[in-house]
Length: 609
Image (tube, rainbow, N blue to C red):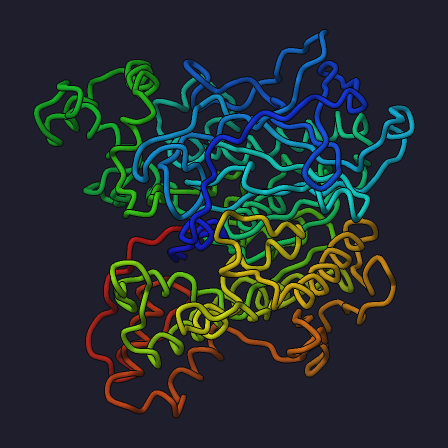
């Protein structure tokens, strides 16, 4: 599935938020904790929690450790100040989220980036804090697995108000997190041969949680992994990875997916009998040999690698500066770039893929799971797509064709729900009866700006549920363009409900009626035809919180597209169908059967969530 996806950072950055370096906090010595790695001291966070920032969970994967599995970090004896976030991982700076410490398009971050952050209820009684054993929520950020950083997400309010421990984590991104090449696979472990280094980082971070989190009052036997977009995709990877078994006990997938690249796409040249991706590791090596004046052109580079020892190829690749590696890829003007990932290697991830692993009872871990999407996922992307909008006075997006915009967003978002929630729930429920839960987030009460109703234009867009889960509304100086006094009371009530459901699920494996016991009951996915399936999340003033029965599938959405009476004007049906094809392969509609001419257009440069 190749869909241009971004996290909540996309829209917030557009509104003016910077995610550059934050000032160092003051040490709060009531936060001193003894851990297996050594003593750490944190600070009091913005929401009154204790916060320990920038704790290393593995050695820096630099030099000879680039494209190797994460190594245990050396211990320390003196108190280590954990007062500021560690570096983001290497990525393009982008106004669509992640690290904006430099102008968009520049390479930022560091390979020394394997840090995590811990938020816990503030306690001056160290012994009592360490003995509390609270549920742990382990957050995996989104950003197409090529951009993003844990520093964008403040877990302090979730920890302080709900009495849980929250962990946010960095992991290697892009070409440094996902890389398969024969030269890198020599004399290393099967796990390292996989090329799924980002997954290995997340496994290492979860192993750190298992061994350390009780020092912060967390219960290592109640760890919930949750993530949005690419983070949700990664949650599903961890569900199917044999290496992650026993490291977590519940899973929440917010707007995730199951797509993967083939091993051939990851490694082979584009002109191989089984062609590789245009950004395969082979093509990267050819391009860097040419750029380094080691070959005159691609043909010469390809010929040179045929006789170049694998050890020399590996040394050459590891000697490349991160910015030179990233320059091989196009950032598309948004920071994210198309690099093959992840890989069905049969060791770190199933040989039959994520979906294959989820379809087999022995192919994934047996834990309760929540699956969800947002009602208007794709409106965010279309709002910034020049095919759908132009800039009013060079600043504000204006719709070119409102009907086309809303119908395309509807069908893309319904496809996302089909592939990311309903079809997965139908696969998982028989294997885990009563332990599969689903939701759709419907909040659309944004204010009007410059006479434009953002609730109508953006609605419940991709990532907009994240602030409700974290209860963290301070997203930059222009936050009022989304969250203002007019929607404060209702969104705070919905946020409290959502946090209550998430925390109750983390506590018991069943969101039930939330931690208060007073919310509408969130029932598991019902197996019978016509039974209640998923929970709608909205404010009481709008559609409210209630169970729903409708199930959508790829085939049902495509069937609706073929007969939708709203699509009778001109070529509107074909335009919407072609957009569905262009934005991703959701089991896409047959354009010829719709009377839309020849072969499907080439997919847009897609970026996975």
